[in-house]
Each structure stands twice: as structure tokens, then as C-alpha cells.
Amino acid sequence: MSKSLVAFFSASGVTKRAAQKLAAVTGSDLYEIRPAVSYTSADLNWQDKHSRSSREMNDPSSRPELADKNANILAYDRIFLGFPIWWGAAPTIINTFLESYDFSGKTIILFATSGGSGMGRTASVLAPSCPGANIAGGRILNGSLSEAELKQWAESV
Image 1 (cartoon, rainbow, N blue to C red):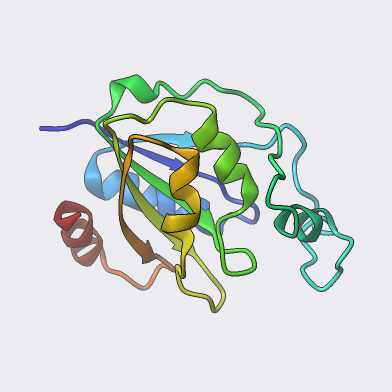
Image 2 (tube, rainbow, N blue to C red):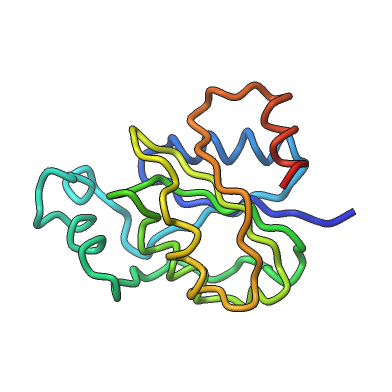
């Protein structure tokens, strides 16, 4: 049986709740991806084109610094990677996380929370940040799945 990790970034707590539920249902370890500088509500104002999140998402080379790089990726075969969808994609801190570790030979299963967008091209956009990894199974997890449905999904990817 493979050992799995649920790694997640959550700006407002929604993705954190989904990640905690997924970790509990799958028996996975949990790791929070945290920015070196936390996001404020002003930073997350998507209606302000000068907000931090807007600037980051409009700059494909943006790589927000991580608070730590303590995830023991080598110990896991499968990594469930969760994040909110921002502007139809994963926040650029997810690229920072993926580029900070060697995911060669690992299976990365994406999940996200979203106020309206789907996963879109998230997997193909993230793939260059984790060469040698297999990215599979993207799904929006906004809390609507029962524990049984969540477990069935997690076991099917």
C-alpha cells in the first residue's frame, strides 16, 4: 500500500477544510503550504488589479516565497495537492511548492476549491513545475461530497 500526503494551500480556510476531510478519509498525512508573507484580505481582492494576488496571477514567472520547505516528499508515493482556484488556475505559490521538491516518480492528484471555476487547464499548466511526476485526477472539492464519495474518488485515482 502506498503512503500518501495531502499537501494544500488555503488563503481563506475553505481549502484547508477540504484537505483535512480528505486526509481523514484517506488516512493520509497533512502538510500546509504556507507563504512566507501571509495574504491579507486586501491581498486577496480579485476586483483590485493592483492587489497582491492579482499581480501574482498576472505574472506567469511569479513565485511567492514559502514559509518553509519541510515537506518530506520522498516519504510519499501519492500526493494529493489542494488549492483554491484563482483566475481559473492554481495560485502561483503552487508552482513554488512544486519547484521546491523532486516529485520524480510520484503521483500528484490535484483537488481544488472554487467559487465558480472548474479545474480548467490547471494540470497542464502545473506539469512543467514537476518534471517526472504523474499528475492525475483533478477535482473540485467544495464540501459537497460525502465521506463515502470522497473516499471512492480518492481510491479511484
